[in-house]
Length: 186
Image 1 (spheres, helix red, strand yellow):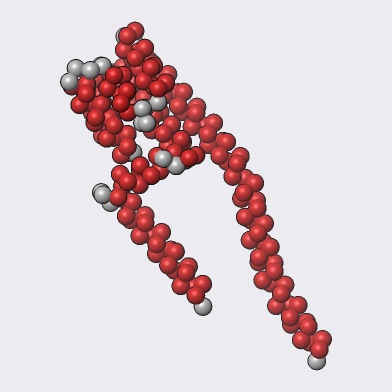
Image 2 (cartoon, helix red, strand yellow):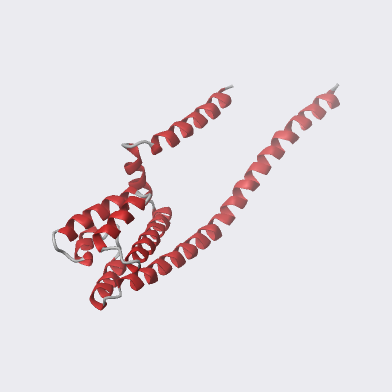
């Protein structure tokens, strides 16, 4: 009797959660929560770093000034953690700091590798090609991480499917045995 209520409650909760996650005040909190998850957070970080580096490198290669490029990239980022980090970076660059120095305070968002490579790109004058290289690196990292995740999840999915099949089998066979037991006692 209560199984139906629980099922409806779960569906309503998930529906309300999906709506709440899309709203203004909860969306940044949700993105921050996802960013800090152990396995998923690493994948999300790599996806956003690949997106940031690809867009920033492409804009610089096209001749768009650095501050304008970062502004465009920050507006195009779907993750609020990266969007706010880029806004802070733009504010520091406008004060006269270089990109890598502006990003050093944001090591949770931009890894040391990214900051050091941007430093190398700024010093060599080839920042756009360094950013494209970083984008390719993080895209490969996303591919490796998702393959590793799918390899890890396959045995768990097999166990879950086995449990569901076993439950269905017991749910079907138990009434049959009860029925044959009552027929045999007549």
